[in-house]
Image (tube, rainbow, N blue to C red; front, side, top):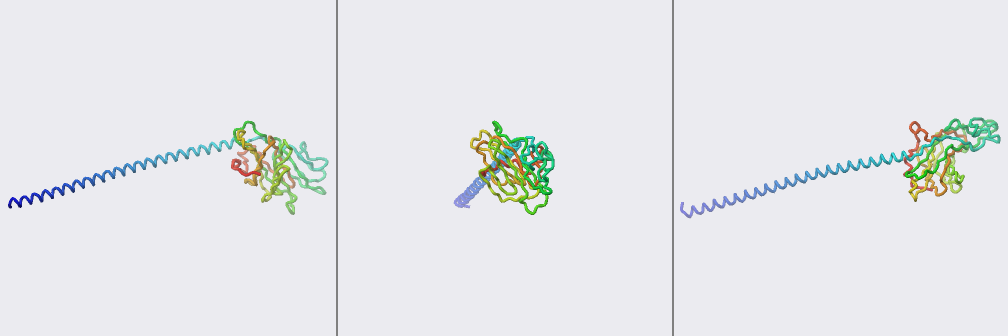
Length: 299
């Protein structure tokens, strides 16, 4: 081979080597980029896992705090119900002119044959129907202990009681039956009550509100009084009524002279079993007494 031929062959070899070298460098760069990408993806996945773990931890903390608040609120609500030993005490109506059945003699028969109530025990009232020429009279009774405004209360205070009615006798219509549950304002000697047979709430002598409710045998009616915390300047106490565990109508806002209220019932041809909350473990209310804080509508 001539010198010229050798020179051309060497140049061709060098070109091939340069191309191979360039390809190797490119391949190395590609591999390096792939390695960087894999490391970056690994870091991102690691960071993502860490973020997920952190979010789960924060979520669990929030759930625990929420559970703690719920438990705290439940405990506060339980402490809000004012448990006072109570019973029916004062009979405030007469069976006849002889007043045969009275506070001192609560279990008796009317000598005129009139129907009237008997205080069987602290919480149960049995209505004795008329006989002969007598007539059924309204039986009114007041509780021994009144519901009084608390002093310096930092929490909501709830007073509440229920009565379960039992129809007595067979009547052609419900006009002969009467059940009234309510509270008497001892400062003004006026009543706020729900009359079941008329499906109406009576607000002292000022207003009456008719409801779309029914009056049935074995219905359970309740009456509650709520006092807000003393430092809640825009808050007033209020009274509400329930039937078979559900609130009926709106609450009645009390804006003046609301220091003391006396529970009472009026009955005609109806007996009642009362629950003053003396033993809620064995005899709970039909109404969930913790629901009262959601009341937002008032008359």
